[in-house]
Length: 346
Ligand code: FE
Image (cartoon, rainbow, N blue to C red):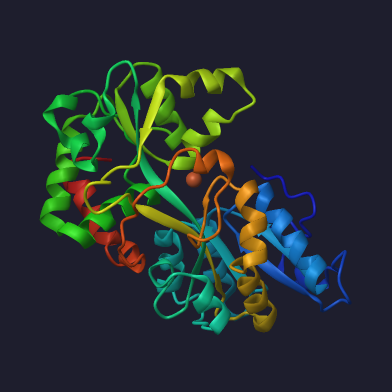
């Protein structure tokens, strides 16, 4: 979804072209900040527009996926024109930090705005939205209590009835990393092996493809981020809504540790040329004004519990969240990849 009509430059633009680019708004040639973003939501652009209006600082966005961003930042080194990096999943943000491409930033506004476990302990990245890893199931085949826990996906009850996305996807890596953090590698391995034994087919496709496979009767349950289900539910396309009608959703582990929650977040690049403006934008993203504005436009949850989520999202119900520090998702990422490989979840 690359709908960024106001973006000032395109992927592949050289740093020189970028520096020469004159922003369309703001108080002069130097009054801008550059974002490398792996998020491509219209809601983000509206937020940047509001920041531009409030501050006169133009926000220029270079879209790419998280891996491209990392490689690009690495290749550019201290010549980079990127000031802020925006990406989904703490696992991705951790990778960018681990590559030494972010700088630690801590301010009172950031600390007040972002719960401690939803940011890097050193301030390399800060969450600004939350997403939940939920279980969806086919209503005519499964009772919700049969999938009340992530553990259930490994039950013999579901032999040949689970579809899953590839383990190379960061959502899967983070899901398993959270389990390693809470329950240890042995437990995580047994769970991954159990789910793997229940596969209806080899991993393929996106989160949405898994939901569609469940609705089509290829399997009975799968894991997905809540907003993929939510989008089908709220879609203008009757075919999407027909998929969602066949599907039930649970927030897993409500009787236990709570549902695995991840973030979208942002961090200031190590070589930011406009560090102060990047920090200003980061603070804006977690401010009451931005969070309140973003919530009804967004398919994710606000970063703080006191900001109400979009009404449709709130209708899915309140839920208990798993309370691990999210840098654990990065720290256990390599081990999670190793476990998936060992159990044959490709
Ligand atoms: Fe996603």
